[in-house]
Length: 453
Image (cartoon, rainbow, N blue to C red):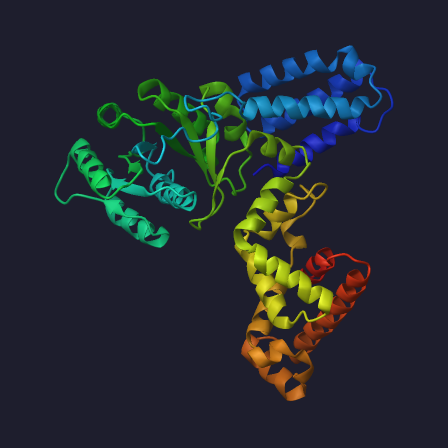
């Protein structure tokens, strides 16, 4: 989302970066460039003014102008300001950060209302949130209280089946409060600790919808009231959040389509304009593509500093610790095979888009273009490896001319491409051997070999 903004702000830092001394004019030039970058990113004008004024005020103090590395001091100020505008460290009623869900313990039922307009991704986000809570050890139930949109209940049933979470629904009922009461009773009998309520939506804001939602909220007394908004709608998402908060009352926001080519203005404006934290972001279409929003990590991505913490967390989700240790031993003992390579390629795919992962690495954020990533190369490698038998992947030396021809036919590639992959594998094994002798893991060289240039 923040790629263009990252490029613009990186350009702005040239006015101060690497200089042993900077002047107030350097700061003015850098701040002006950042201001234009924020405006082009569709950040709310009032938010931009506040950001610029507070940054200039702090950056022109003696701490920056007379510091040993004024450029770094200035960048730190911009980083800290971005964090404060994206969120904060304020504590909620349960003692947790307001960015986190304020849910009760497992012995009491917590209720989460999912609010939003039609098309915002409310139903999908409800299922994604249920999956996330399930992984965290909670026992969620989805309550089908969107009784207006055609097929809303059916969609929720399909999504719930994908994530393995039960759904409570009632046939022929038009009263959402009655459905919620039924869900509450079912939750008590089945030891559910969290009810996620998929509420009624409309194509646009109207008083009838607001009245219905207010009545449901009064009955449910939710621990969290989350607005689901589409990041692609820009400042409209901020306006919708403001209206929902005034009419219903919100505890936070979920931004969907965060992986889209939007300018990022909604994410940067929400907290300042509405006073409500951005709690979750939808980063793709898969059930797992749903992440907590961390203001400090987002600020790091915007400034091109990467986000190694999120990258490590994604890796931990798909790579088992025992498997990682076993892989390390194989590398050390030089028993790494094509089967292991195929497993690693598939693990990387589970972590999400390659571009988003590379953007989390410090120094690479904003430097990788879509055309620089050879997705076709990755797909052909997987196809070639998948077309081999287990025996061939276990011992690549048995793959002679006739086997290469069969593998090429099976993978839709050429004999030359199969030969190149085997040659690359031999080279990669040689690099791993050197790294093992040096007493290192060799993982970096493996990754380098796994992704074709």
